Length: 114
Image 1 (cartoon, rainbow, N blue to C red):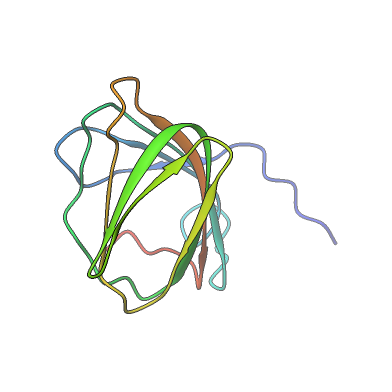
Image 2 (cartoon, rainbow, N blue to C red; image 1 turned 120 degrees about the horizontal axis):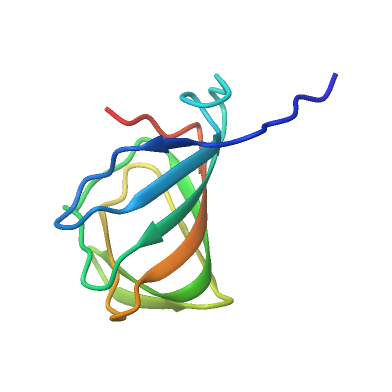
């Protein structure tokens, strides 16, 4: 039977400024372990520490731009573009635009806020 998700759960973020993470599907909001889907909004100048996540992440930028640093490259993902990052690879996200960024992130398996 389908499960309607009426509203997301806001998850606390890491970084130098507050970022809004609204999880619709995932461990926190729907008890889904194999996938998470979140709507994110990060302010201009936001950055987070580099990490090696245990999940693949598929990100679609809806507005603004994300700066994605890897061990080998620096990529700018603009409105209407997407990026895939893979589990175990070092990655660092930030928001270079003064107006911030809005994006959807899908993680497999689900993101864990630990």
